[in-house]
Amino acid sequence: MTDDIEEIRRRKLEDLQNKGRTAGDEASEPQSPSEPVPVTGTGELSELLAERDVVLADFYADWCGPCQMLEPVVDTIAAETDATVAKIDVDANQQLAAEHGVRGVPTLVLFADGQPAERLVGMQDEARLRSVIAKHL
Image (cartoon, rainbow, N blue to C red; front, side, top):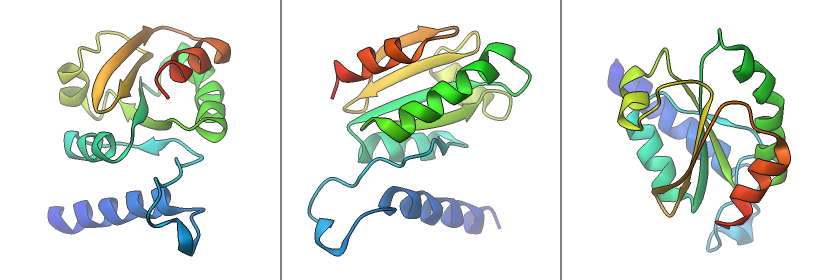
């Protein structure tokens, strides 16, 4: 059953990533999803990093006030920039958070070409996030 769930997640991720593409776009870089992509494990994050040039990983917790305040900013970044935004719940993905050195939330890690390039801890404003992303696009 776990394999079935992973296959469903993989297909859903592909569907989200291919959303908005036209028939002639297959050879070009797929558009970034306009909404944050939920990531539930190391494999999903690795796959996303392999497929996308710039990924902003938002490590958050549902109980975290600053995370809740940051959510609309992250949603706007996903909708209006070429970066792919990954949402990672640290309570459900403790090992993944530990692998990336997340000690507090919110923590935003910007990956460029599959490698961590920037780390931002705490509440961030939209202009700061856009600036960090622009440096790596």
